[in-house]
Image (cartoon, rainbow, N blue to C red; front, side, top):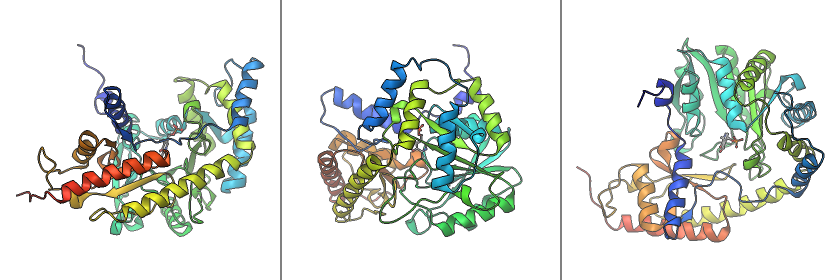
Length: 404
Ligand SMILES: Cc1ncc(COP(=O)(O)O)c(C=O)c1O
């Protein structure tokens, strides 16, 4: 075979998708598997959103649109940014894309050159390092899990800055940790971004999924961010619209223009019908979102209560999103039958192969001491999955070997 590009050879496929696919394969082969891997709400898309899509089809709104998204939607998004995030941009500063993932891709393609560095706080969303590499830049990982609480560590971020730093990626509420950055933390990061003269790409896709009075705050609302902040968001999580593929970003005019140029040569406009549905989602009230968040909150409490009784498991209560990042390193060195477990990948394989519960290895998020569990599933499945995980971990506990 002729060689593939070096760009593609240094890129890994999504590990979360891989683990979900493995669980599916085992299920199809007849194994009873509970998947706690989902990165999407298990709720239907709201009815009024589906109706808007049907109306778009009925009225033949089925052709190419403006590359950057229809003006109606960009105006709705600009108004949303202003109203909900105190982030002031015009419709010309909005680019609508085929999912937030494409928004992030477009943004990094627009701002990165070979040799540039992009700072990532670990634990980080699985796709950032590879999207950075696809832009010919280098991910620089800053560990932000001081005291095991996954909070951003400003001093370490400052120490990681170099003359090559082009941008910092922020993700709050965070996938996988569930941490929601405080106003104080974001203010300190805004100061750092301003002093360093770099871009900040703020991925706010879980903004509406927060608990216990924690409120999402956008770095785009801080002074001096007008020419620095690229704010990414999307419909996937808040409106249970993962399959519709609508994401968007707002930012400095020249960045948006450049990102739009990238998009024009890759996908052109996002799906026309989904754009009309997005207008309905963003203007149709938040009753469905509130209902969904209420359910997630109950499941989180249930899982928290259950897991806090498993010896040696480290659990940090999520403040947002719908994941737990569980510390499992105290189980490393314990025998699984085939040998001692020594990594998150081996732990995830053990739990899936031997106990029928699928989770994602923390190594995918830069945290090999952890596994990620999603509670975007029915209470019945969650209970079943948690029981299996406890069984698996407890069996390990009773069969300890020390690694030389
Ligand atoms: C932190 C984060 N950003 C972006 C995305 C991508 O979302 P979209 O479906 O809009 O591409 C995800 C999806 O899992 C995510 O968890």
